[in-house]
Length: 168
Ligand SMILES: [Fe+2]
Ligand SMILES: [Fe+2]
Image 1 (cartoon, rainbow, N blue to C red):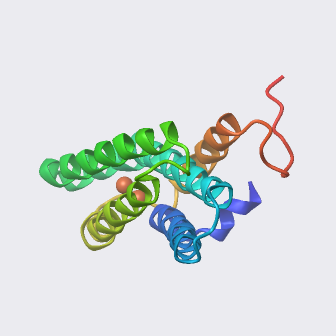
Image 2 (spheres, rainbow, N blue to C red; image 1 turned 180 degrees about the vertical axis):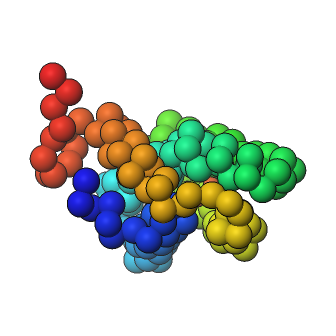
C-alpha cells in the first residue's frame, strides 16, 4: 500500500485522476488535428472512457456520500451526480462506436468539454467545501486507492503490461 503515500489526501488523489485524463483529452485532440488514423485515436478514447468510469465510481461509492453528509449541500451533490450521468451516457455512446464513425471525434471532444466543466465544479465547490468540512480526507486515501485498483483490474484483465492481479 506504499503507493498511497504519494497522495496528500482524497482530493489530491481525485485531482490527480483529473489531470491524467486531461492529458489524454489533449492527446486525442492533437491526433484529430494531425488527421491521425482511427486506430490511433480509438485506444486513447477507450482509455479516457475507462479512466472516467472508474473515477466516477470511486467518487460515487466513497467520496461523494461522505462529503454530502459532512457539508449537507444536497443540491450541489445532486448536480455533480447529474453531470456524472451525462458523462456516462456519452461514454456509452463512444464505446458503442468505432473511431472511424462519423461524429466520433466530436463526441469525444464534447465529453472533454463536459468533463472540464465538471472538474471545475469539483475543484471550486466540492473539493473546497470538503477540505473545510470535518472529514478525514487523508484517511479516505487507502480506500479510494484500493477500490480504484480493483476496478481497473476488472476493466482490463489482460490489456495492461503491468502485473495482473490474480483473483484466484
Ligand atoms: Fe465527479
Ligand atoms: Fe472528479
